[in-house]
Length: 68
Image (cartoon, rainbow, N blue to C red; front, side):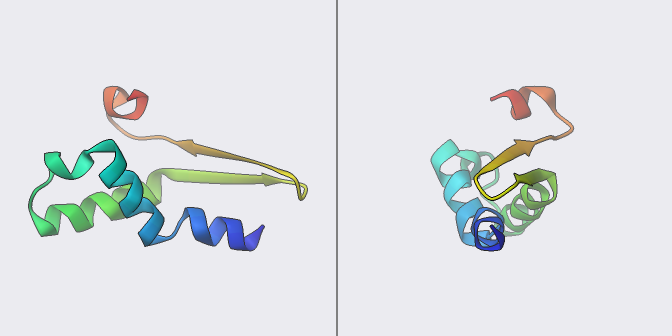
């Protein structure tokens, strides 16, 4: 499960999520992109239960962004 945690919380994975959800369109500035990646990494929670289940959650300050 450590590998799963590393994969989910990897920069590469987070950047794929940003691209998939179109979040980079809201932050065209490269510095803002870096801040967005770091913010998402901080806001992701991963809980591992035993060896066969896990829960990923995301919490943020803006309820509309988190919901979408």
